[in-house]
Structures are given as C-alpha cells and as structure tokens.
Length: 129
Image 1: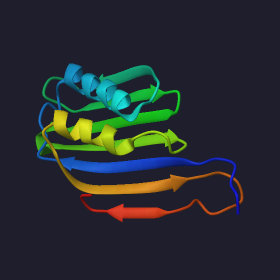
Image 2: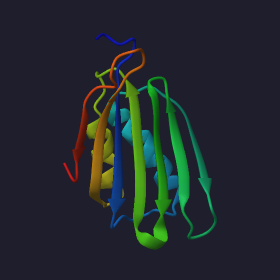
Image 3: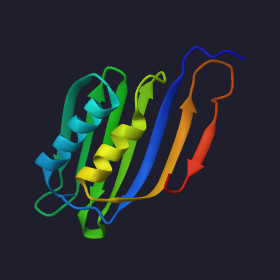
C-alpha cells in the first residue's frame, strides 16, 4: 500500500561521551550534524540545567529535527534524528555527533515513518551499527 509520506527516524544512545555540559559545544554538534546530513537548518534551541548539568537541545530543520538530551554525570546522551524523505544522510549526521562528543554508540534504531492507512514501514534495530 502506498503511503502519503515517507521519512527516516534514527535514534541512538551514546555513552562514554565528553563535553555533555558544554552548551556551545552541543550547539556546534547540532549545526555540524545538520550540515553533514545535507539538511536545511532553521534554528537551534538549547537549555542547560545549570553548571555541570545536562543540556537539552533541538535543531529545527526544514526537513524535521535533530535533538539531543545529555547526562554528563553518566557520560550519556540520547540523540534523535528525523527527516522527511530518504535523500538525507542520517548516518553522517549521527557520526558527526559521535565524533564531536568522542562517544560510543550503544544502541541505534532506524525507523521508516509514514502517514496514511499503510504500515509504517521497516524497523531495523542495530545495537551499534
């Protein structure tokens, strides 16, 4: 069955990461990830929970979003990349974030998203690509 929309949604859990309380560094990661994906960056919004605390941020894209939530006390971050269509490189975006945070990927899940009456598509769970 044909659906009205097709997009990819990549979620990843990162561990052993650095710079997780550094708001400017997280912002630079999101901007670089959007560029690596070939996406159109509209705006970046960030919130720090205080000195040495985690950061929550989102890069709003014309194609959808990239978000990150960090826990410096655990060296962990959760990353969410969602883009319309299949012409953007979500792997390159994730790789950019992983490299800039010197992190390890412990869980990675790729979903094909759709709307309409058909099934949502493929689900591929891959622990560390």
